[in-house]
Image (cartoon, rainbow, N blue to C red; front, side, top):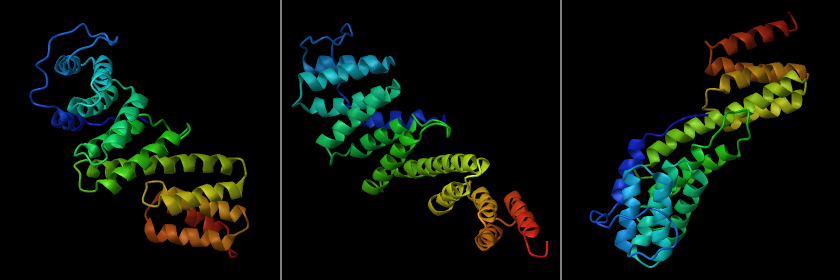
Amino acid sequence: MSIKISRAILLAACALALPLSACAGKKGKGDTAYIARDVNTLYGLAKERLDKQDYEESAKLFDEVERQHPYSVWSRRSQLMSAFSYYMAQKYPEAISSAQRFLTIHPGNKDAPYASYLVAMSYYQQIEDVSRDQKITQQSADAFNELTRRYPQSRYAADARLKLDLINDHLAGKEMEVGRFYQRSGRWLAAAVRFRTVIDKYQTTSHTPEALERLVETYFNLGMPGEARKAAAVLGANYPGSEWYERSYKLIQRNSPQG
């Protein structure tokens, strides 16, 4: 799944985290070998690399600020800037690690919602299509849920809720794919479990009408006509004009005692 975040949100938030007078340092060679530098010079060099969109090198230099000056105010800022730089370099595991370190050390900081957002987005950008394992998708959902729970009034909460809707639709799509596979294989009970999961856990997604129709098919094949009719009734009440209701109606007619 390839869904891109607006760089404007991340860049704007990142700008808020930058000190206004941080970048007056001297130019350096850009390597990350341990060379003792004063904090202004090192932070300035990291910011210079960031401005040139050399994100991976920028991240390493921000890490150096934290390593060489761990008790300075620059260390806190650099943790967050390192996470942002790794994110922009598409080094998502490193971005998660840096952002989570910031949250562990500074849970009450004003930039904690942004760090939490970076964690969630770093998982989100790794989501793959429904044919693949969805562990990362669930981790993204958990991270966005945590963000909205802890920082419901933050500027990132609205986007987190939107992303959660997309993630839930994706997870429901995975359940549907597996359910269809079981259905094609004649494993009707296993298929029913998957379709029921969509209806019970992801009922607001776009997959619900199809899940209900496939439950109708599955229940008939399991010899449960009463349950099949209940599923068809729910489908008809909520999606009366859909192609899935038309298909379920034909199934009901075909399997009725008078048919």
